[in-house]
Image (cartoon, helix red, strand yellow):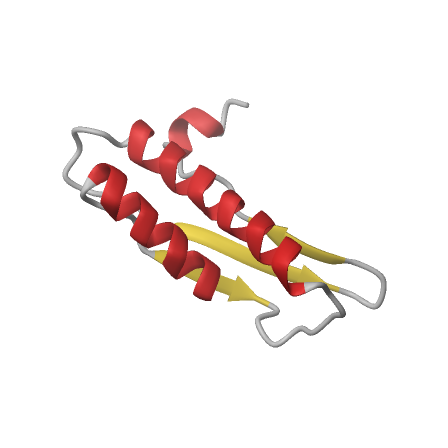
Length: 93
């Protein structure tokens, strides 16, 4: 959540607006990690998704939220943060 808040502040500074961030999935998952590199990666991931959302929805009155999904199993830990696009357009790809 801290990395999402940082990215949101950066987006507010750059675009004077920012989409909300919704974190769902296995939010209570835990795993071993080194804090500084992981935070850097997450901040960049969130900033890229927010930038794509802002640029795709520029000039529109509504900003959809950036949805972050956390998934894990005994072997893997995955964080998914796709940019928001029009569902009708992305259904063709």
